[in-house]
Amino acid sequence: MTTPLLNIAGLTVRFGGLTAVDDLSFQVQSGQIHALIGPNGAGKSTTFNCISRYYDPTGGSIAFAGEDITHRDASEMARLGVARTFQNLELFNELNVEENALLGTYSYGARRLGQLLRRPSAEHREHAHHLLERVGLIDFLDHKASSLDFGRQKMLELARALAIKPRLLLLDEPAAGLRNREIDKLDKILTELSSKEGMTVLLVEHVMQLVMSISQCITVMSFGHKIAEGTPAEIRADERVIEAYLGKGTRHE
Amino acid sequence: MKTNFDLWALVLAAVALIALPFLASGYVIYIVNLLMIYIVLALGLHIVIGETGQFALAHAAFYGIGIYVAGILNNTLHLNFVISIIVAGIVTAAIGYILGALAIRMRDIYLALSTFAFGEAMQWVFLNWTDVTNGSNGYQISPAQFFGFQLTSDLRAYPFVVICAALLLALAVWLSRSQLGSAFRAVRESDVAAQAMGVNANVIKRVAFMLSAAYAGMAGGLYTTFSSFIHPESLGFWTTILILIMIVVGGIGSVRGAVVGALIFGLISELLRQVLSFQEIIYGLILIGFMMFAPRGLFSGQRRRPNPPRRDASASGPTTAKEQP
Image 1: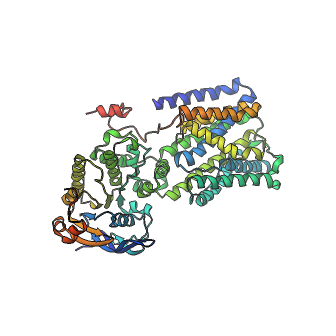
Image 2: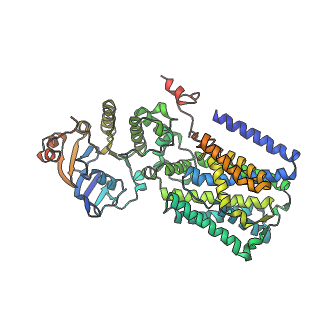
Image 3: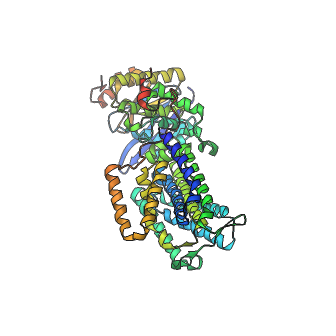
């Protein structure tokens, strides 16, 4: 197998006496949709926040595209090609939909002072509009982000992350709180991203219907450990997983 | 509609400002000069508080540093006032950057308190560094120079003051519309999300402090072109609060708001100079009025679009856009 796009090795995170993530290792292969699942408190979001560099791990290493990023600053990740969404929406609430999406182009569109002191280029604006069209927000360009309903806010966050033109997209519970119709749309968008554009996605998610439908690989965590890994079919049949979920296997089916 | 407002306001302002010297007395010209200074000060505070959301309360200190730097250059080297203003801007920018680098470790009320402390300390310096500032006796500033032309009166300084203020206003609008402006607002709205976009929040905050201080410093430099005297008394916290009131009442986060707020409160503060005891009461009443009827200011929430919508140039609002097939 070729070098994985993301390589987590021996990741450990301790908060005081609590070990949230304990010696966790897994790889995300380029072009795959990879899900990180597990019961609440398993350490999924902590892992996620280490990869996007919001938390510093206590031990272990994180490599992206062969480069060690364990000690990078969070604000460097976009330029490296890692985009993320947030579990509890982090939009620029008072800014309109267009400016939110345009900020996604900042990491490559405002690198030189000459660019920083100008508006985003026509090309980057077009890219942002294209993504807003894709998530169904093109008619809301002037709306404040905070005025959108929850589902649309989630979609705006996705469009903003995609505007970064990431090589790795990190989605923290993208389906949480969405209606079934919206989940179907998300499913379609992510599948399309993966199959047509070869986007690599790592997602933390509780909505099993979505996870099982789109993932090629699933890593299951419980109490900070990796307890299983495999294809959706393998995970469904795995006894340790069923046990971790108290015999329920899938929570939303 | 908003663009029309801006256009008409600019045309009216230009006509009024050109006609004014032929119609008005020296005192009126003095007040207009002062209003220009207030606009520049308000624009500066707008950058750090309105755009970037960092409660920096040392604005009067930077204004003061700008006045003393430019005043000393005028008195000793008799430099062209443009150079004095630029030097005042550079000195305050440097100090603002350093203050920013130290202060942004703190947030919210702590940031406000630490910058307030810096402001108070600077006022103490103005009062006690008597060799340089002449302390509590106040500092005499000799007339500014412009290629051998002496700005000895308010009227002579007037065109220069207006042009400088207009240039700084244009620059503020430019910055607000640029990607740097977007980065400022991103930091204001969410540090965490800004970082995820690749915006280095710490650098952006320092830049905002720097630009804000430079505006205040240049306002100070501009002040020396028509005024021959400064007293440290007028460079204290109350002046910072006055400018804060301007941007809050005008509508925080809006360039229009900063300008209109500066005009309203600059005028009020000057008109009430004779009745000092009423000044604070009247400010108080106006503030209460705004809190009740327009808590977010005159121009709140009317954030400028980065660009007109792509689909339909005539679609001024979302309602129209939604009706498109």
